[in-house]
Length: 208
Image 1 (cartoon, one colour):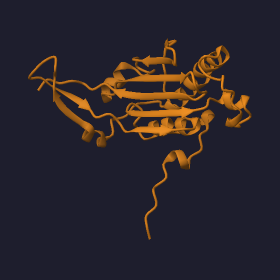
Image 2 (image 1 turned 60 degrees about the horizontal axis):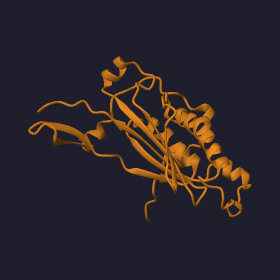
Image 3 (image 1 turned 90 degrees about the vertical axis):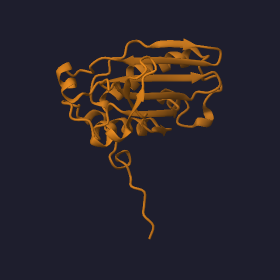
């Protein structure tokens, strides 16, 4: 009898944004992560080795709830500072307008529409980022973000290099310093939106 693929927490535990407990305290880095750290010679300082962490596996999603559950699970697994997820989806305001029938999405619903652009910006600031903060369990101190627009693409880039609401002493105690990057983009030929969200550990460098 063949073995079944083990379901992850995203499948087992429904997402309930109103009842996610915040991450009150940090703890030690998972021991398994040490296998993902390697040393390479510094380009800036020949002869000096620096530690480099292999990027985490990119997880892909096409539903907002699955994506948010993934972020929640990373905190549950003590990997809140080391993950990379991507989401390719129709935002809730688009699905509401077409009554959940993607065949009825207007071809003009894209980045060239002022209404779409306004609704997407509202969705990002008032819903997406706030929901991701609940799922992470700690503060997301994103600024207004940098908006870039070309002929066929519109994107917002947000960065958080703060202490995420924890004291420097606590982060130093467990050597858990990390930064966050969130990119949201859309194009001129579709109402689909792409989200790229990653937490990047900042390793303490030691000369060898």
